[in-house]
Length: 68
Image: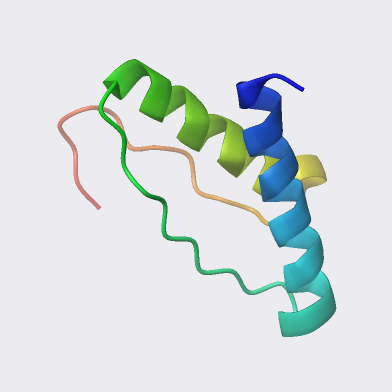
């Protein structure tokens, strides 16, 4: 399994555990990295796995320079 796919698999597993144990609630704390490109890819893959099939909706990112 590629490193990117493994991050998605972890996200899917966390989502499944959350549905089973906490009614779908998730708190994720991700350890940083030293290569910003790889970190961005890893976080994206994890979140895609976590939200697979729209089970946990997330808001789209804000345009660059805007804040919520």
